[in-house]
Image 1 (cartoon, rainbow, N blue to C red):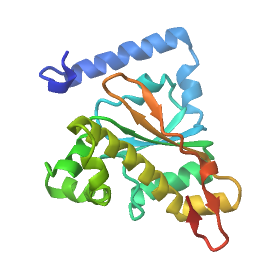
Image 2 (image 1 turned 90 degrees about the horizontal axis):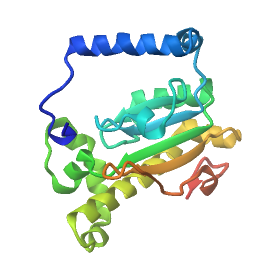
Image 3 (image 1 turned 45 degrees about the vertical axis):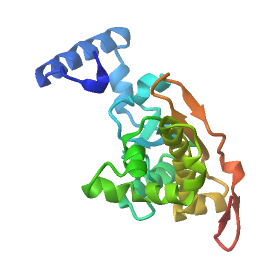
Image 4 (image 1 turned 135 degrees about the vertical axis):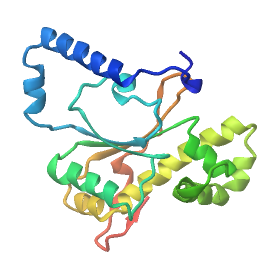
Length: 217
């Protein structure tokens, strides 16, 4: 199946059938699987990533249900006025007490391409405008890169770094840092061409809390 140009897909009926087969298989392997799953969640990870349909987290990361609390949007943006994201972040830190936050972008991201090349419109165009502004700030450096793929990949990585910075600008993270209970933060990029995850070596230890509530990177 060519995922990039999907012409066939599972019908709704097939999805329900797949679900029943999977449930039967899980119950055969572990009769208490769903009872344990329904008991509650205590995930160690909050994952902030892109909505791209080619990113099935549990397959790429080989994790089980209950391990990852997830927030996804186009081009993995951390918007300081997005009540959806802020609610997820607050719940993850204050109630679930996650130990790690992963901000993960990916190469061949349509949102990055839309920002760099202006090939979108409507609400998506407005949503990725911060990435376009980021490109304009680094335009000379980005335009010197040898080809389109290199420029897109660099902007995808740069976007992750900026979103990590935005994460630390939230009052939720500032309060967690102040109280010494902030999760460790990781900035990653997933390469769809290889399936491998690249660690951009961004961590909580890089940031310093100041009593004035300003953060330095």
